[in-house]
Image (tube, rainbow, N blue to C red; front, top):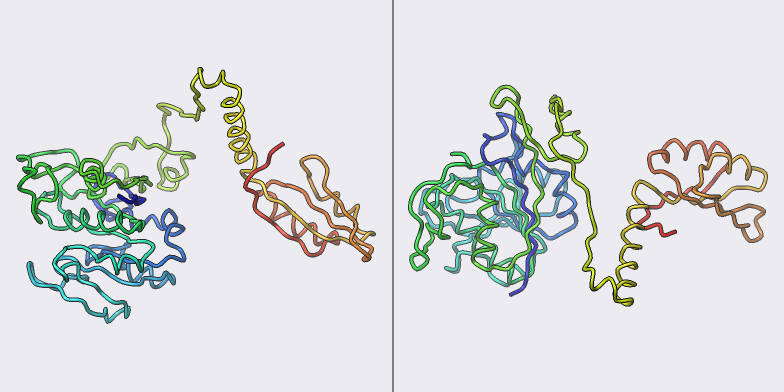
Length: 360
């Protein structure tokens, strides 16, 4: 079975939607836009797929994101069809994007021919927290289609509207699964649709690689909660929500762990040391950029004075032009102040280049 990367933007299952302070997966634009930029995109969405007060599809079109097709589930893309009504393929009048019914062909998922045309499929549907909801089966079948075609599946998660804590009802039997029972869960499964998708992926052996990118869950304190316990790198999201950090429960850090027996083998130890060289090179390059520029001979000293080089800048004489090429590594946070100063000092043809690694 081919493997598919599924990125699930998860929001806290026990909290209500945006009106009460939770930012849903579809609103985490900065997190998922780099994943879909420049890709051929299919999207599974309906009337619940909102980014604040605008539909997700309309929003993506407005920011010039390419959407090749929309996949319609029960009730249709805009939610205008009755329950059980057959959804046919058509063209959306608002956007001009072709809408493909997941029910055409009788297999409940996109055909291999359609999937071959796509790089990414976005899934953004609000579920109701109950096993009978057909959108769970849509997700399960879509995961299979993406796995078979090696197409990336991006799940934009939303809260479980009847909370993500309570579990109730009997388990569905494996031999009696159907379109209203996608997996062997209780009637009330206590998960968001993204979390349930990950569980189905694991337990049904769909063999998809799942990576989580959690959505923001900063609620309006004290409207619906008294405090928030959050995992954060900088705490900036908490501060932006007007919250005060009152205590730190734990601090995590990264360790590289090796097998002691393997470390005693010279060849393996050398390979480990080479890997560490690459990792340390990436860390060293964080927050730094390479600056390259040209400068006339009479302005060289003035330009050099503006450069806080790691050691000393590299200076090479230009062929037959009476000037010099200068390059050095500087802190990225300084570059926007430095470039105008370099230009004032006489530098020309200034280039700012990103760095992947710095190995000493």
